[in-house]
Image (cartoon, rainbow, N blue to C red; front, side):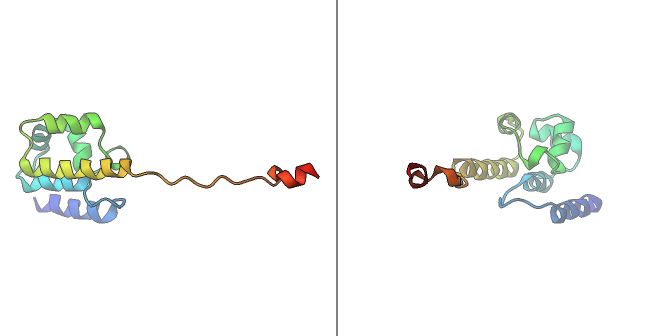
Amino acid sequence: MQLMENARAATARGRKQCNYSVGLINIADALIASGYTSLDQQAKALGLSRSTAWTIIHAKHKVDRLSTKVSARMLENPELPPLVRTTLQKYLAERSADEARPRRMAPIARSHTSNPEAESG
């Protein structure tokens, strides 16, 4: 157990969570706090395969986010612990709020030949 906590702390320190207060590491921590310490227990609690659960637990998921399909499978699982469900819902709410936020576009640079006064002369 102590070894797992040390590994989790090292991973959390070494991994930057880009501007989100809730990340995959928090979902993994919620699982551990709920008493699911083995990979088999964690996979069953999440309703996922062992390999997908391992990827989430070790915060090595593609681009550090869950696909819609994986998060839906987790939420549909009746065995998902309440703490994990709450953490997952916060995680999804943050991401959906970020996606709804309008993106800034870079200004389009004008070329020097598009000056109408220079062309009419």
